[in-house]
Length: 307
Image (cartoon, rainbow, N blue to C red; front, side):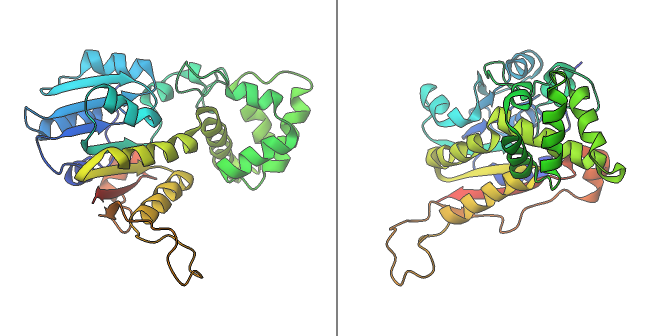
């Protein structure tokens, strides 16, 4: 049974996200609605709330279980469509946007999604049933070089070539269809001290590719900034270095007037800053939060405000 996960960095999120209590707010990664319902409690009755999630189970769950006092709209869509979703529903300007990039509770709680190497299930990894390519498709069709690149680029796995080679060897004997099959291949090619970290990296890499996570984030960031009203804020919580690097670099670029290379004596880009940073360094969870909520362990929160 799915339960509401404790929202990560909740106090900090609400502190930074709310610029006006009668505004329009978007939770772009709704999940089980922990941040969403807490945000509702802090806003006036006449505020508007929009919740987006790529997983229809999340929308169904929140529609049934959340009690929101304001007018609210729940949309089954990938958050890369945040701009279109807001425009279609009549809200071209938004007061605050939250993106918590942690994995969906519904996906984590379901062995059928194949996101956990500790529970056997089909090697799927899709957040949304609308996606066609699964992790099994990638594992069984990509060549050795492609697999190694995926593991290195999206999992930052040093042993990527060796693991890719082992996968190619094993799939010639049997199609790799389950998380257990893949995990066993990885275990046999990894030193016992590093098994769990390596499994996490490989599964992360496949999950990112299946769900186009980094591509989606890059588009969502641009569109989110576009629809923020002046003084509107965007709060993003990341959980691994690839996500955080994208957010950090985008925020830095968009908070800078000129983005020309340093060797250019005169600005040629005509770029103007669209945001200002409210967090020059990411906000991290404290020891108490990590102790009470293990999901917060690797979280980093960054905030920007529309100029």
